[in-house]
Length: 257
Image 1 (cartoon, one colour):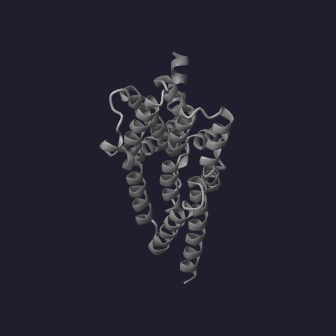
Image 2 (tube, rainbow, N blue to C red):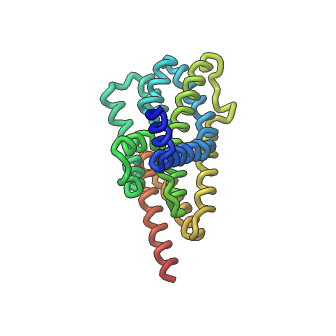
Image 3 (cartoon, rainbow, N blue to C red):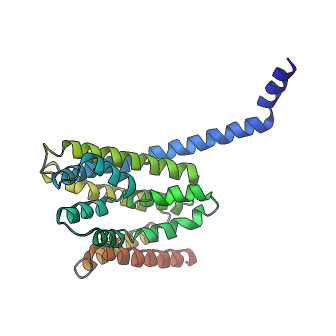
């Protein structure tokens, strides 16, 4: 009876209550991240199915598609990889190409790192490993509004998006034998439509609307013009740097005014 009373007292102690409240708060932030991932999941559904179908027709098996989505987890790089595999390109050249295509992720990590330095090492590793164009757009928009979502939100957003990508690419590979013309279904426009929606939501949430619109316009113009003379991945990196600089300068002037 004494032990039972002691256990009851421990369970009802302020420390236990505080621990339970913290656990509930973490779970709530994780669920918020999953909820915010819905637009990304909708975009991944179409483009993931399209990739799975393309990979299947290129001779990649369903388990290989799932493994690629689990480890590589990069839509543009996966499309490029499948094309290079089908063309018989050596593995070394494929690795170098993937690095060049995904070099923009270094910028994403640099932009997010000041906000997650206080987190644990394993949390930062998971956040960085699952960071994509789309999840970065959502995270930067939320951080730009002065709201720090925390590790739970990041993990919820990234885990849900990654799981959706693996599932959709695998389903696309399963269906790849019966559907070959993905453009007829409009899958080729899904990713662009998703980015347009994320851009509108991000701009609408900025306190300095004019600076955000100007930065987006400059970034788009530089990306389009740069793609004419540079590889697409480098054009995106260049556009990102210039657009970020323009946005920073304009927001700084607006604050001074």
